[in-house]
Every structure is written in C-alpha cells, then in structure tokens.
Amino acid sequence: MHPLIQHIQKVTSTPGIEGDMILSFFETKVFKKKDILLEENKRCLLYFFVVKGCLRLYFTDYNGVEQTLQFALENWWMTDINAFRAGQKSGYTIQALEATEVLTITAPNYELMLAKFPIIENYFRLVYERAYAASLLRVRMISRMPKDEFYDLFQSKYPEFIQRIPQKVLASFLGFTPEYLSELRKKKVKKKTNS
Image (cartoon, rainbow, N blue to C red; front, side, top):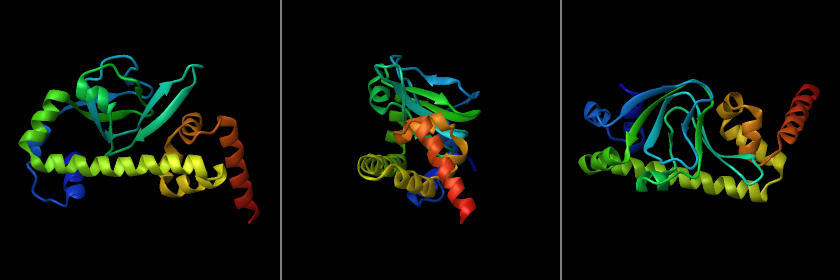
C-alpha cells in the first residue's frame, strides 16, 4: 500500500480507502539533495507529500541569513499554504536536504479531491491541527525555555531530525547560531562520557 494511503488510514482511523482514486490526483517527483522545489517570490503551484527524504521551508531575512521554519520527513506535508491556495508568490523557499521523493498536487486537483472524498477533508483537518499545535509549542519553547533545555526537549521528541538535518540548518530552526549549537553538542557529549 502506498505510504500516503497508509498515512490517511492511520490519521483518520479509516480502513479501506479508495487508494488508487486518491493517488490519481497526484504526480510523483524526485529531487536530488539541495534541489529547490519552490523558490521565494515565485508562484506556489504545488503541495508536497514526502514519500522518502527530507525537506525544509525557509526564508532569507534582510541580512541575507536563512531562517528555517519547518522540516518535513516521510509522511509529512509541506508548502506555503496561503500562496498555494491563492496561486500567489511564495514568501518561502522549499529545499531538499536529502535525495527526496514526493507526491505533488496542484491547487485545482486538491480542491477536486477534497470535494470528492470527505475523508480527505477530515484527514487534512487533523493534519493541520497537529501542525498548528506543534508550531505553537515551538514558539513557546523558543520564548520561554533555556536554550540547552529546549535542545534536550527537541532531541527527545524528534531524534530523527538531530540525525538527518545539517547542523547549520538545525541551528537556524532552533533559533541558535551554528557555533552555539556546536558548543552545546560538545558539552552534551562530554557530559555523557564523564557520567
């Protein structure tokens, strides 16, 4: 069974979904490491579901520094949702951090799929609720927690990110400088070896 159909069934607790019909709305695309899937200030025409690999969503600030806002591993979705729905220019860039396979869907196909399959509307509502809760938690952690505690919590909740994301990109996401993250990691390793 395709990973997307498995994910829909898992999230909605609904077996026996018409997988082939749903998949007919999508196109498979493959990207190499560092490929750009969406460029800032270009029209956002696609929504991406990660079958295999890892994506990041970021913007470049006024000083030319990249600020990473989101990652997407297997079974995660990514796009600039406002620009996608309106067919407007994106405020963000999406880049493959690894060799990545995605399913893509256009806005017209997305609307048709939602209209044809009410279960998909339910699925996206649940996905958005989880994503919104996670983004609120991240803002709260960045704002309130000491940096070393924030890193520990992030590492315990998302160990796969720590293994797969380049340190500079991870530092940007966590609101750290790469140098601070490097020092923090060294302290953690030293603490483990001394215990």
